[in-house]
Image 1 (tube, rainbow, N blue to C red):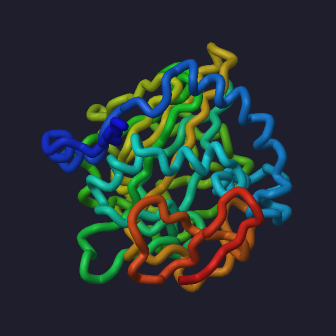
Image 2: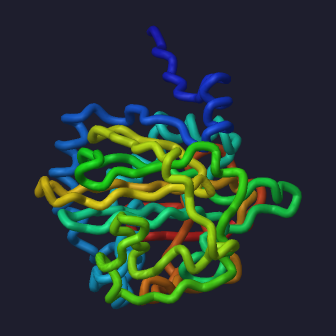
Length: 315
């Protein structure tokens, strides 16, 4: 019997060099366009049922904070499969090595008329809570942040709020995440920043600037126009943002971000709950997912089952 070799989606040497220089790679294909459209038509109704979601707290159940969009891969078999797809994981492993955790996923919807997202960088993800959510080991302090793979579940373009990057900006942090931003939901869709309506889900990311006079060089920004089923891979420390949804189309833009770190990184260190975006949820039922390789460190709570029963264990 003939064995069909598994396709390898690892980055080539040239692709890896380009990623290291620019801080991102893609877009690349994860699903065919019609395959993605059909999957989302099927899955969106199932995801309205939060009865098995790991965050059952009032803040998450209400859907009024960004926390409600976190970690649905832990109760959705489609999303659990998505975060482990070789088209994604092979490429992430090219950057981070063979032993990988997916520590968070998030949906990012943008509806007609919604503001764009502030220019920002994330290293420890303490930006909203004021407490580090990931910590790299001391021996690799030159690294930081996470690899994000942002997949377009719908069309993403300059009309409906696509991502923007400033290439090469991932090597230096312009923001101090130990400063805590102030949550003011009333300013959502209200702020004009250098002629563009932008915000950060009720925060103003400029509050974290190391230099109060710093302004991103938007003349170097590139727009990530993507079709349904395409994905982009980037360092969270890369300067990134999104443009507003113009409202000239009635289609929501939807992205799904999966975040990856090596197993040597501590996730939610000494933390029992997430408190941000005006809400608070318990991490009692949370577990990171080992998507490739093995965990030789035992630092983190791992999910041993993602869609049936939420059985978690510490290793």
